[in-house]
Length: 526
Image (cartoon, rainbow, N blue to C red; front, side, top):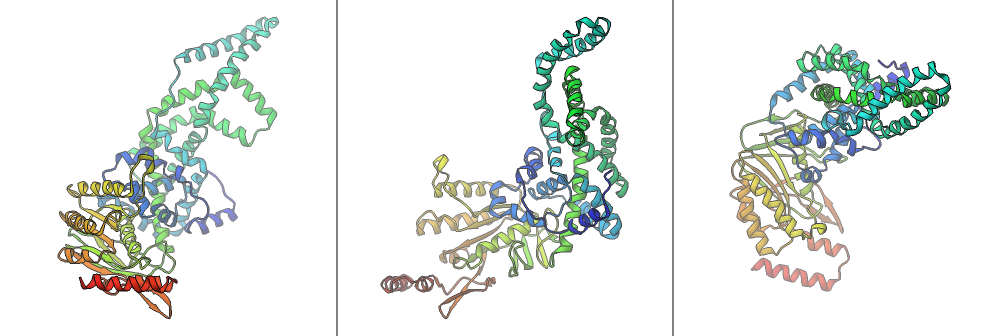
């Protein structure tokens, strides 16, 4: 195990619970989800919903993991709703265990830190991707290795034929450097596998964890560690051995074709142990993600553990958006109803919808919400907030929106309860058809135990949906030629609109404003 100086230990322990600074490489962070987990989960959070709710930014705020496997595991955890409370209970028991002994927790942090280097991101392909296969001509590699050994013996007996070694070396050099790309592909991941094995052993000792798959993985992968020494040598040469020594070692490996022979032998053995590698990855990742949640709760002033209920209801007190500085908390309680939000631009409608969506996902993943209280049933979260033209596939904004809403309609008819989050339904068409189609679709989505949150400027929708939806609004005031937003959720439909006042405050000519106000009064009368 790595020995750290007292100064470095102090720095690691002081910083591990804090929000991370710097660049987040989501290409590597998302490997576990995209390569392995996405195809194996029943209730995934779609890419659209993930983007609509800014979940990458939410992850950056939440992430307090120490190791790279822990970071990948936490990211994948946030990408799917967990309908099983057993995993949540296991996580909570780990969090309680971590909080019970500070010294023990510090030991775990220092152990996990051994997998904090960037190369540890590359563990996932060892169990999530197909390995490189031997080429059909690989028999020639075995043959040349045998010839090389025989040639050395032959030259010792007949020194005059030493030039034969150069002929063999020329052929073997070509094979050796052909294999370099193969070796490079696993040059980072397999040394990290050896670290993963050592870290798992230490964590098992610290936690007293008893699980058949983990114990078997430690035993079987431990027996393979000696055969993976080529990767230890490769990494050591890069950092410790001088150029002269490296040249001679490289010469020997080239002549006897050590690298390609050992690489494909190692890959064959590892191929048989993919699930055991995954077991160790999960073991380390689950401990690290639990530690991250524990740290998040300590470092964040207001969080709660949600209450999962059976009824179609959402009840929350002082819920807020985690990414907003000095966010305004709001409270809401609905039962067997959905929600229609009205209000002007920038008043807080869409932010509140995102707030509900984010906390619904976090409630069902890390069992933590940014609120004083949060209660909900198990819900699969879907959204249609950011929709844009798909010019590459020749789809207009309206057609793209139609396809997105159709997917929601299809999903609403499944046996799973859903939370649908929508912002301005059918903005791409005229008012008459927008309201008529919107009402029909929203009523359909609201059926069968689903819950809908819709933000709209169409005040007329409230009249059609008031029997099925609770009405709320956000509003602003205009005082002394200044617009003031309070971002507070208020019951009922929006009564006083300020759009024309805002136009006037921004310098639109009186002629435009007079006509606009006159037409507005006429339309209200009609």
